[in-house]
Length: 199
Image (tube, rainbow, N blue to C red; front, side, top):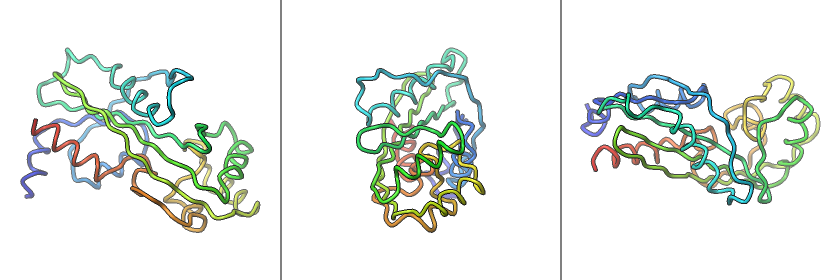
């Protein structure tokens, strides 16, 4: 086995997210992990710069865990992904009509996806942010309505999944990590985990 991977496999990794995309991406890293989620309020100061919001929220999610109860080889991974257009955070849609309106906003423009991640152990914590720029072609109304109806993107920031039909037909270019847009910048996370356990 790869020596670095073998070292990480000695740790009990707790992935604190309900996102099926993040579960899939962690499995792709060939890491052993369990899923534990604590309910937290996703509030942040309104004056906070948008690129700091996802790390702030990932730390909030980590703070919901009782560090006293952690074992020495436990590692908690918490994450939050936001979509930003013109300096404004575009959240998850509240209904299908809202999803259509969000995709109309993103159509023909470039937006930024930020994922903030916090790695927490019993004794310390480390956070980082990953940034990707995504450009949509101009989407026609029929394509938007088809996607929202058939793929139901209610649980996704920005009302779309890059790995779904709308990503295949609508995204012209990506600057940065593709997997970051899905919710977990896998290459960066792997490097940060290695650095964390080697400190």
